[in-house]
Image (cartoon, rainbow, N blue to C red):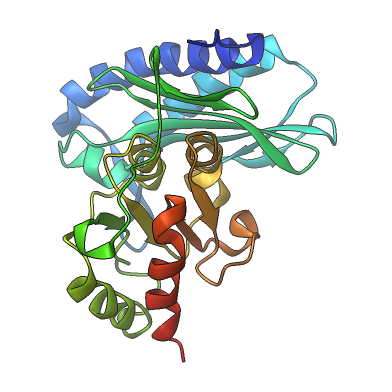
Length: 264
């Protein structure tokens, strides 16, 4: 196993520290105070508290770095290094007592994602990757799946909910993929879905309308595990567009064509 660098240790340490309170909150989920942030988009005291811990911990370790955080947006720091943070990806799952959520931290350096961490505290799985070093879960090296046929593949997606993309823009893609694959999963946390692609648990993942903090860490995880990540269109502006398609190299062309055909 390659040893994590100092910067990855900062990221994993911050995620573990923030997760301790998050797990206590998860155990008391019915007592959490919840307010509406938008249609079907909840913000909880757990989100805000976790973001505060992450900000303080990361800022203490690298005081000059900037931030892009889900709840508080962009702030400060130098122009070359920026943390992109989702303190609780899968908030709706969390607030309904569904144990599928994660803390996601990525480091963007000179407009490129160079390191990422996705921590799933319920199972204590720390997915981490650094450019040129590889992708790992805890101390085990990750590789994307080796499946070559869509008919053997299980792929994940994000089904738009109220207030997001209109159903008539999404349903043709779902309808096109369903008869081509072995199964489709919708679990509700994009960062963790991408980590599962990196681990070979899912053979692919696609979604639209995402934010940078949803996908930044997952992008480097999949790439360092030997996978391919683009927009559904095949372009490379995932952070700006919120469109993503992640698979192994063998399935990327076929799944991309299937999804794009619905837009013809």
